[in-house]
Length: 171
Image (cartoon, rainbow, N blue to C red; front, side, top):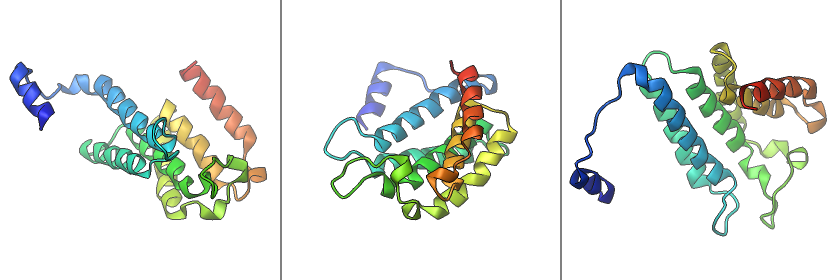
């Protein structure tokens, strides 16, 4: 309410961006959503190391943006939703009883949220069909981790190839 009033009082006009402006603005929107998610996934303040409320809100916002993109959402929107779902699927296994981080290789994979992983995997494939963007590549890496029954069964050569592509896109 305060923000709306401040915007109104300052006379800041509200305009819907033109279609050609959407891609530039979409990158900023996706970045902010991912920052919200990351703060929830590894909180920088407060007692809790993981803030499920922030993760859930970021996933909700990502899904909302994806729905609002009418007929065909951009691949990176789909990729971000998939990436957040895959990371969040590991939430219950990321902390031990003392609240300390558990390394990926040591996590009890049975504690991973399998329905969330199942929802995300087709989104990763859909996003990759749209081209190898940064979120799509990160989602593909997360998917490979989630598809391995044990850490030793992870497709490390494929992960290295994906990281090589990611480094070319974002040095």
